[in-house]
Every structure is written in C-alpha cells, then in structure tokens.
Image (cartoon, rainbow, N blue to C red; front, side, top):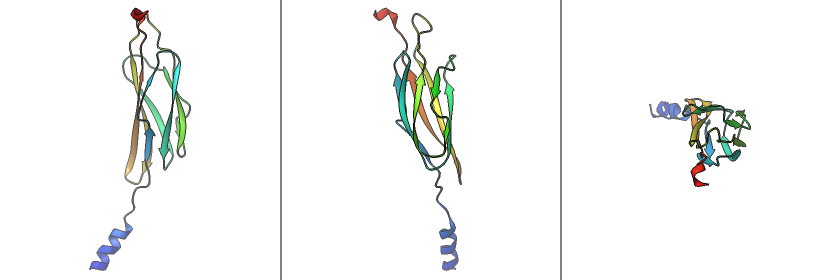
Length: 119
C-alpha cells in the first residue's frame, strides 16, 4: 500500500509554466515616453493592454507575444490632449498557459498629466 501511495506522489508534475514582469509598475512622463520592462517566462506568453478611463490607444508594446523571457519597450504617446490633462492608467496583462491553467502577471502603467498651472 505504501508503494502505491509513493507511486502516486511521484507521478505528480509541478507546473513549469510561469510568467513575471519586472518591475510590476512604471510611471511615465507626460510627453512621449517609454520604459523597458523584463518579462521572465518559462513558456510562450501574450500581452493584453487594458485601459482605465475613456482614453485608449495611447500605449504600445514592442512585443505582445514571445516564446520565452525578453525585455520589451512600453511606450506612451504624449498626454497633452487638453490644457490640463489628467493622469492616465493602463494595466498590461502577461499570460501563459500551464498544466494547471492560465498563469497571469500584471504591469501597472501610469502616465502623468500636464499641469499648465505650474508654468
């Protein structure tokens, strides 16, 4: 009986799939700006941008999928659409699939607004 239990335990596999982003948050200037982040993954991954608020399309990634770890550039277009633009935010979700299901890591991106009152 003990041999059967030991046999069952040795058959279990640890899920090798993981994805992590370093750092997990960046703050960008209000002008055209970017940050370099490292996606550390043991498997192929994809990235999806989710915007907060009404503005969309202001953030781009140099790669939205890859087969392993790599550095990517997160770029924001200038946040100067109004005389007193507000800070804007997006969440980038990095996802891979493993034995146990989907594994996700996130990057929080904040871009400062322009405060013309300070000039």
